[in-house]
Length: 123
Image 1 (tube, rainbow, N blue to C red):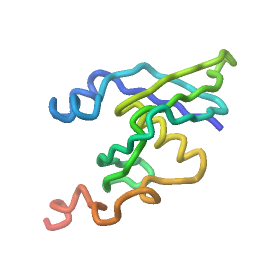
Image 2 (cartoon, rainbow, N blue to C red):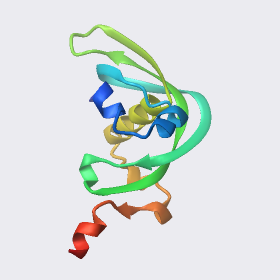
Image 3 (cartoon, one colour):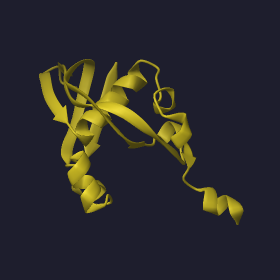
Image 4 (tube, rainbow, N blue to C red):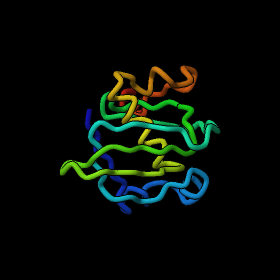
């Protein structure tokens, strides 16, 4: 069980400033976790749109915990401990779900499932 996640500054800049503040979308360096274990730190559920390369071109609103702690080891076997909140916590939970065979569509509000490229389909 391995996941890698990164949120570079250029990617953060793609989001509108208000959303960046509201969802705490902040850059973080590449993190690799082997055999990660997740613990919820803040059980508040925050709903926001998510997408996934596994289901390209679609998004839906997904509730996620606001803050989590993930621990494991890195690619060299060194211990890793990460307290993530906001958007970083959302990413961690999304990736942990993948390791358990769960996609965001399994957690989404189905009324919000949307094709992001629907305008191109009309052409």
